[in-house]
Image (cartoon, rainbow, N blue to C red; front, top):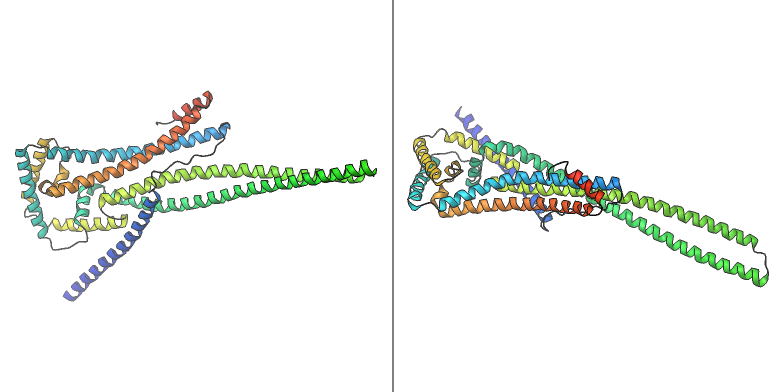
Length: 409
């Protein structure tokens, strides 16, 4: 019986090790993909590529304005979500400032309770025998956002799947744009060839006309038949050239429309690509992991470890008492988010830890600001394009106002 028990424990450890190795390999691959994504964004924020639209065409102009408005609304929705998260991070930084500016006697009480809480927490951790594959940084992150981790895992997996689709769409749109540009060059080349042929035929006809005129006036030769043949040849050649030129113009119009469609789709995909990459990067920094699979594994390890904590409650009462003291002192200082300091009380004791917390919040805020600036820039470019069309004619201004009134900008 004992042999089977130990054999079962060994197999469980091997399975966990294999699972961890698979997650490590997947995380490294996705980390490399994310580096590639950031290299694509290294040149700066995503720029909206302007479409070539015939402004005088009512249908094309209105459709173009509606597409610009759609991009504005999408970027604005992203800005709203980013501002909410940005306000929360800013609130944490404001709390740190209030703690730093607290009177010495209140700091002494707060730091004493925090020091005791850290010591009790460390003592409880030493009682744990089971080791789990989770770092302290990951543990703190999950502790801070434990209630939303399952939802973030599901959302993260959707973002990762969507990232693959977006990159495929970008590659396909890039190929399509290259093909359309090649078609435009081919049409231009054919049109140039027709012009050259036309010029050559005109020169030949002029030479034949001069020769026939010389025969008529100098040698009194009857040139009726040659003249009729030359005129017929000129008519047929001109008809062929004009027909081919008409086909080229039609092909150019069709190709130009396809190019505009490809540019519009490319702009939409670029916007989604920008926001998706920034969101994935923010989640990676938030939870100290590299992908959703790793977060799911770390969260499962955290839950197992948490169940182990539940078995060791000898010092729970003292931890609770010191936690209440910390909350009371923080409340006296006017701290808004008091409970979060219970999971990072070491930052109240060690200045270096507080510096790390502040740096982490500043990095998160900077990432949010970059994403917010990128979306704001897209909105401004789209609005500038609409303003440019508005200034063309009064009736264009009415169309712009009508489209903008369809949704908040």
